[in-house]
Length: 235
Image (cartoon, rainbow, N blue to C red):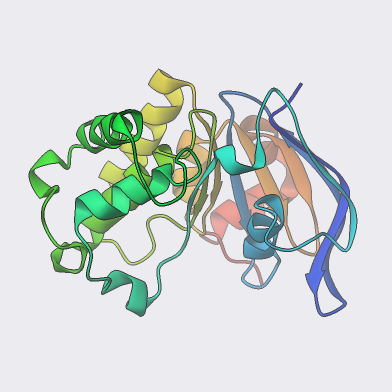
């Protein structure tokens, strides 16, 4: 059974529908990239999958042993969040909150935080203040934090936004490595159609026209060719 199945969900807010009766699924080890025009409902879909807002219709089902608190999430950062005055260790460890009892972290949670800090290559930054880091370093910290919450599924909302091309390429390489070597399913919202085409196994395009299928089928569709040709923007 898939990790997440969306059955004819309609998305929106304040009664305004953005997406109508959308169906798709995310299996273990999948890499699904969500693309579409600005304002088409991509971030609304993320919030719905996280249970932060209900769908206007339809159902979101969890399967394959996935609990609601076992989804790792890397959101878009606000300027206030980028200036957060905590250490890298504190931020990564906070990703274990769903595993801990109360506000206390045990040996298992601390070992998991150290493991993910090492996996993301940020061990030398462990005691540094988060707000002193570069944008790429901050995203690695947040990715390590998200990994503390899951071994199954990561939801990433524009993870490379605001990063320079070299740092962006390295971040995408790390995400692809987590998917390929650790079997973690990736569900990523991105305006970067080049990254979607390079790394994704499946594409979900939301907007006036909806597509869900393999990357190859998307690239052969009229919608995919048009979207790729215009660099992730449609008229």
